[in-house]
Length: 271
Image (cartoon, rainbow, N blue to C red; front, side, top):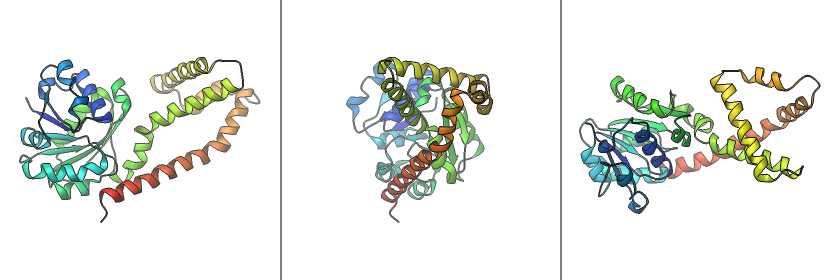
């Protein structure tokens, strides 16, 4: 049984570990975890009997053929410097870090490298995991990653050049959608006598139903809009406002996230 290592177990790392174990894509006895804050994961071996907490990152590198780097972007170079000398021959590094390119990782550890950008929605066994590989990753390794992630997400292989943009759609979007729901509920509550908590519940229930129509029943977005927004009707007036004003808001969001991405990339690889 192949041991799978996780270096780091913060927010997204823990989401992925818990999702893979919950979906039985991994067995607890396969999983080895190291973290700088073991007090945050002390419950994992209790809840998943057989999972092992390692004494340090080097132990994970020595004991595992496939290792998930689940640390923040600025921590990746330090972790790579620590584990690269003790990696097993044929090791496969799977980085969950945004803004750290395949080239940067491969330069520090010239082994098989895959970048995976998961989503918090993996905890609901839904959403998308974005994947790209370096040239050393063969077909068997790529298929392994696809099979591993498939029970908890849709797996989409993308060119690394498109990874940042795709991340906005898949990994950042749950937070953006949640924030948009809050703002819709706030606006309705402020303009009516509906309590804010009740308005938010209405919005979330509607979001769930809309997602089911769009995803499960494969209703195209334009068709769904036509079903609701009759010509000359009330909803159509709101659609006109969204078509007019929302593109500028979304352009501003993308500009802000792109600028932040560039800053993080520069911090990770000043060269």
